Length: 245
Length: 322
Image (cartoon, rainbow over all chains, first blue to last red; front, side):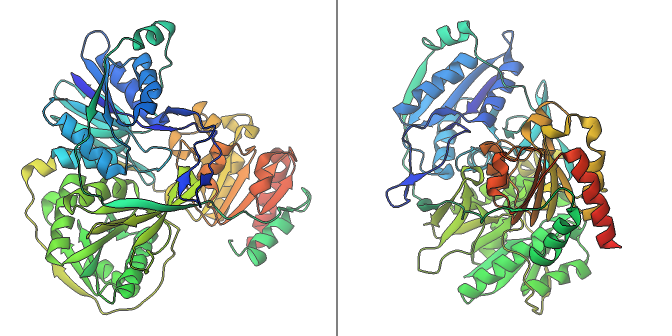
C-alpha cells in the first residue's frame, strides 16, 4: 500500500496572530511553525496502516526551503520519504494542483490530508486533489478502515455521521478520531536526518485568488458582571438587552 | 451572467443555513443586476422547493435522478458545474456545511474558479470581487479577491442571516449525465441524532469545560441547553478525556462556530479555545476564577462555581419562560 500524506507548515496553535505592512502580510516575527495538527493525524493514520512492512508513506509539502524543519518532523514521526514542491503556496488551488501533478503517475493507493489547515482553514486541498485526479474524495472523516482494495470511512455531517465505502484509489481529509497523533521518538528523530527529502519544481498555473488584506476581529466592550445570586438578572439582560433569548 | 446557489437538502428538507445561502446569493445577484437560480439534488417536494422563492430565487433546477438520491460529492459537483455552464452562472454559492466543504473545492476545479470558503460578508463591488472569510481559526479574517472569471463562495452558517425577498419561482426538472466513475464513494449508512440541535448550525450554544470535573456532571449542561433549545459543546481537554464526543469540541483544532449566544461554563478561555468561538455574537462566561482570560472577551459574566450558578440559572430560565 502506497500512501501520500499532504502536510502544511502552520503557526503553532498558541500564536497570537498579527499582521504587518498595512495588514497585508502575516507577521511571522517570533512565530514557531509546526506540522498542521490535523495533518499529523492523517500522517499517524498512514503510518498505522503501513506498519510492519505493509506499505510506504510519502509526505508532500508545497513551500519554500524554510519549511524543511517541519518536513523533517513529519519524517521523524515515521514517514519514509518526503517531497517538497519548491514554491510559495499561493492558495489551495495552486497547492492541490502541485500535489496532483506529482501524484498522477505515482500510483498512490490513498492520499490523506488534514481536515483543514489551521491558518487559512481551507478544507479545500483534499477535494481539489480528488477532482484534479478524477478520483473520489471524502472530506472530514472521523474513522478509516482499509480492507484490501476497499475502504470504509465515517464522515461527519451536521448532527450525525455517514458511513461511506469506496473501492480503488481515493483522497480523504482527516479530523480528530482517525488516529492518535504519534510523537517522534529518538530513533525517529535520528533517522529523519537521512531520509530522502526530494525537492521538485512547481508547475505554473493561472491565479484564481489572492488575499489582499487581513482584519482582526473587533474587540468586545467591557464585560458586564452579574452577581452569582442574581442569575435572573442575566436572563433578563440576555432577553431585553442582548435580545438573544 | 447569473448566480447559481446549491441548496443542500437533508431528508427532503432545507435548513436555515440553506435559506441563508439563498439570501446571500440573491444579494450578489442584485449587486450584479442578474437573476438567481437554485439547484436542488435529491428528493424534495415541490412545496419545499417553492419555499426558495421567499428568499429571492426565481428558478430552481430540480435534479431528482434516483442515482443521486444520496450525497456523493464527486457526482454532485459534476451536476452543479454542468448547471452553472448551462445557466451561464459565473458565481456559485453554497453553504459551508460538512457536505459543502467536500463539494465546493471540486466545483471550483471544474469551473477553474477561485473559491472563498468560510465567507462571512458579501463580495465588494469595487470591481475586485473580494470576499471576507475567516482565517487563522477565527483569530483573523482574510479579504480574498477571486481573480478568476468564475467564482465559488461557501458561506459560513449564521454569518449573513436569512433575508426574505419574495419572488415568483419556477421549478424546472434538470437532468445531467453522471459518469459511473463519479459514483465511486457509496453511502452505506446515515446516522442522525434527531433529538439534538446540530452544533455547526446552532443559534444558541451551551459549552462546558474541565471545571465540570467529570462527564457525570453534564446533566445540568444538557438541561440548560434543552431549555434554551441550544446545542451542547465542550473544550478540548474535555473531548480529549472522552468526557464528551469529539464532534462537540469547539476551538482551533475542533470546529469554529458563530452562534448568536455562546455560554461558556467552567472554561478558562485558552487562546486556542477562543479562536473557535470569538465570532459568536454574544458571549456569556461562568467561571469561579475572576482572572480567567475568557472574561476579557465576554459580554456578560458571572464569577461563581458552576455547580451553584448553573442550577440557579436553570431555575431563573424556567421562571422566565413561565
